[in-house]
Length: 258
Image (tube, rainbow, N blue to C red; front, side, top):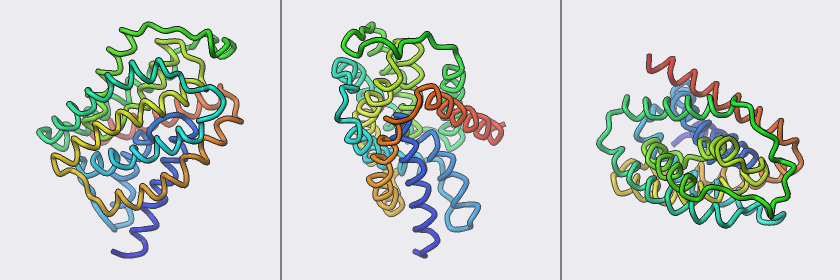
């Protein structure tokens, strides 16, 4: 195992987890294409779609809990949302991750491309101003939240994501949750989702443990740093950064598929 391999995998994990903590996503939206293309570019490894999804699933588990730790103060974690969406996404992510073992490489990439495309479209939908609402006055449709979380869990479980990149636009656009609460709460739901996703990937032998371990180290360092910066940034800027990242990823994946 050479030094270049360790550095490249560490940097992929660090960048992805920093963005994860900052934007409330598990980071797979960025790490999935980075793991698929960058190691190959350097000639140090050529991970399959199944290996990438397995490494991502394990790494997201640690990135999301580290990000939640960064948001533990400030009242941004909505416990009711975490319970309803967390329970549904846990079931969905286990079903999706276990079922992914029966899909082809192209099948996994297509599911990822569809999820990224949906998320990109939702991020560019104009949002009503809910950021001025007092955090204690936030209400949402519990059945709708749980149903959407179940669907997100199945799709994201297949690609080894925890669904944060879809949860964020759903919470902003459909459930009308303020940006900072969305970012903090989606990280907590992402953590729950990644438990089901990781168990499914491990059970079906899709995890390459050495790169996963390197990325876990990077996550624990980078995610809390991202969360710290997020609390000081303008919410409009945060939404814009996430929208651009998701759109660029969707375009790249679909160009490769087609």
